[in-house]
Amino acid sequence: MDEHRLKCFVAVYEQGSVSAAATRLHMTQPPLSMLLRKLEDELGVGLFDRSGHRLAPTATGELFYLRAKALLAQLQTMRRELREAEQGARGTVHIGCATAASLFVMPAVMEDLAACGLDITVDVQEGEAGHMLQRLRERGLDLIISRSEYRAPELETHAIMDEPLHVALPPAHPLAGGARVRLADLRHERFLLHRSPLGTGISDMVLRACQQAGFVPNVVYWGGETLPMLLMAQRGLGVAFAPQSFGQLAGQGLPRLLPLDGTELRTHLNVAWPRQLGLTPVAGRVRDLILARFAARDPDPGAD
Image (cartoon, rainbow, N blue to C red; front, side, top):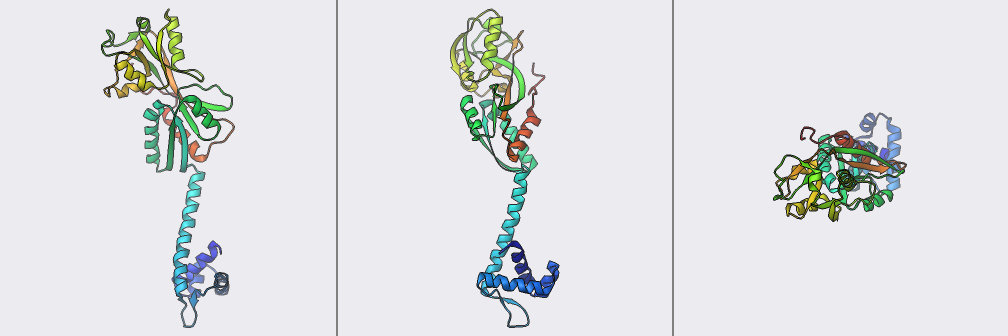
């Protein structure tokens, strides 16, 4: 049984005669009559009562009509879904995200997907950079959006959300009410820094800048996530560093972020995917949306 036979049966059922159905199907009557006979022989049942002047569907034919219509609709839906999947308009994409990506990138991506009417499911997984990289290599993830700068020949990377690095001071700190903070004025503070197990990251920039300012910082905490360090700074446990975009969360129990004076420190997120292994169409579509919206731009150029 194939789709053509199903369509022929449905046409005969709905038209009530072979001749009318043949006209609808743009074919002659004898081949259509022969096709119906072969279909009944294949199924081993009678689909039409031919005893009268007009074809009448049997009870079995009535049931087969319902099933045939459902099958044809499913085939049409399947073809549409396959076309959409081939074009990257349908499917699931698996993305490993740093916290900043989950907070500031993925909401915009979901808005774009909804605006485009794309039937795409985004499966976000957060975790340590090394674990996400391993998952990417194992094809458990399609993309990574991370602060780490991966230096691996098998990866393709693009920078997104290039922005200044700001400092978070405890609310009672003497410099907390100022407009800017000089890094040299923090030489006696307790530093809360990001751990950078892969490539380079925020802590590498801060340590180099401190060295250029003539001191080695007292690092009392190494962590993988920005938000816990900002909460610690709010509680007076040290000074933390965060990209400017985290300033959007001010007033949510987090300290105010201040620009650094006299030191140009900038950071960005990186979108990474396997260079040699082709992305699925849906993963490629989501990657292109991310790059189009965020590629190497300052989220608030006038903030400084």
